Image (cartoon, rainbow, N blue to C red; front, side):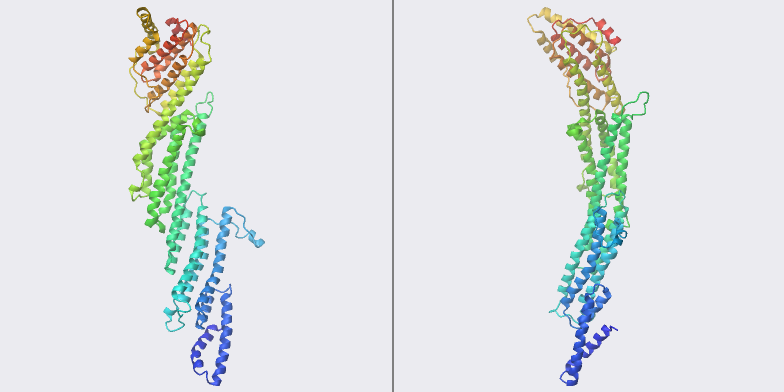
Length: 621
């Protein structure tokens, strides 16, 4: 009938009497029989104590009876914890198995039936629930049972079964329990950390935050059972690390989205234009608006998802040691500021021309320049305001100032537009340079047409003007003369008259010297000067670079009479069209005059074509 507790109770009551009358022969026999029975009872209780199938209640009963029978308490502590560890290890092995399933590793199957049962990976919420309902529940039961059996016995029963200091004091028993729990909880925390890190595919944080909240709540309850430990803080560290991982995940997602937006822009720019179809290619303004809207919406969506960590019904969201770092360092600095810095760095790489990024199409540079200028003007402030409204920043001294980000984007916007001007200017310059270097200017025939390359230059600059006009305002121009397209006639007469006077009145003075003296009193033109954020300034910079290259190439060649006249026709054709694109038409006049003047100086037979003939050829061309 296994009435062990009744037997022990009767024995403990009769023990003192039997010991007192042990000198009486009749009592000696009874005492001896009782000792034999108690020894057998102790053996049975120890067997039951070591049985893995014994329930916690049965274990508690066994320990209670063995302590009443004066078994060494320290040995019982060790055996109790060893027995408990066997069951808790099974719970941890199940969590480890789930980790392998989620990560795609192969799991050993002991029985064929298990191939179809419990082999599906759990989601994060189910994983945490399983850990809480099995491992944490069991270890809490172990702690409670241990406290009742070894730590609180002499408090509850001061006159019975007192554990002597020689056997196992409270301090030693508590230390054994703390070491035992810390070791197992360390393994459990490692499993939870690994499982949380695997939670990267989902963009929604709701399930993850609910799982972390249950995990955090359960750990807080454990502190009451074992006051010498602080598992809730360890749990909060795991929650904080999970939040940081999600912030990093979203930052990488935003970076990838920005790269995808750039790829879409490049594909639209590179898409061939179909004849008769105007809708197959978006305008630059449409591409800019689409990218800007998409990026802003993506950032807002990320911020909305991260708000799940601050939901009022989440226990850890109200903790200052979580909320402060999460809002300030996590969202504001590691997400928003780092994302802005990433955009800045990508744009800067385009300007530096490092790697494959140096071959960016010029329209993309133009779009990014306007994009960064819009960010500096309003978008950065708008997005940071949204972030600060939803994620309160307590200490503003720890965050990057808004002015610093705005200054960076203003700087990179100007750098992009300057780089755009240089790239477009050098592209046109390349055409002009090749057209000058690959022609025999001494033996060329008399000009009858404008060279095709000049028409291509005008077409390209007109196309550039159209692109820039989609993104930037017109800008300020100086007042034009009444007939800007015919200013080359002024050049031909005044320049020849000046040269004739120099030849007639100062035959001993070198003509090039006189030309250089005249340049000293003319206004200096800075070719690579910074441009303003307007259409006229951008086109002026491109035209200056192109004509300056034309001028320098002419200075390195030798010309015959017809070569000079061909340059005269080409420059007049450029004069007819380029003045429309620049801020000051006199700049175009001056550079074209310099090109013709340099050609005259490099000409073996400097005879200019009649101006009326030049105009006729250009108008016909």
